[in-house]
View (cartoon, rainbow, N blue to C red):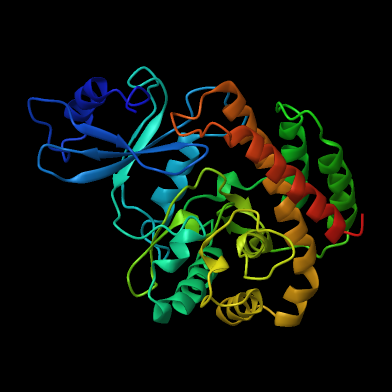
Length: 349
């Protein structure tokens, strides 16, 4: 589907503004990249055969403060010179008249995106442990970047990140089309209580959705690029780690992961291995990490339910850019309820 990225107007803009993209007589070739339930990603191929990735918001029902292309662009541009692997930035377009929304362009990074359980079979068995450990290494490297040094200091907000996130997502979930929010509300109340007792954290660059489905891996299991920066903020490193752990399902788990991923296949490291690796890489105290992570994992499950509410609303509104399966809305609704109930149970609710 290219209606959301019309090749003709895009080509005209590229010809005017981005000389490094080879534009011939005909328009560039645009193809939607599979996957993604929020901001939309497209592969753009120019006249020389070079490939780029284009990111734009959904085509409708955009929640307030979400889907900010300029914000994504800032994080990617700031991190490009660091050790954190991001797609090399190419150009940003702030004019919504070009394709109907703001968008940005990066180089296209080849790699294996492990976005579901089936994908967990693709890496060779010998590389699967490396996939998990290098994922954590990159996360720790991200958290080690000083926001002030890379020009992101102005994005820091007053107050505690976790408390801001609880307010933000609770407000947004009540703007969704989900008919029953009782479990979400109950878990929110418990999280507010528990968050008040947590020690303060040192602000860092938090990705917000850090998991293998937003990473590109090489055959050796190493991360080549981190994608999907729409939820990035100056935030709490343990929120990122808790999100990764909540999505890191393992065979035999009683509670499903927030998002099914490759770790449901045998051969990947256990969650305890990830925590130990993060402690070693970041220099954090392992005991302290383990004491606090229960709240952050519960928060991750609750926030997953809130995000799922927004996705459910877009499914219901038919604005998922052609990627919504017929039963996607019902499945999303059931999943978000399970995650909210799991968060509440973990918090003793």
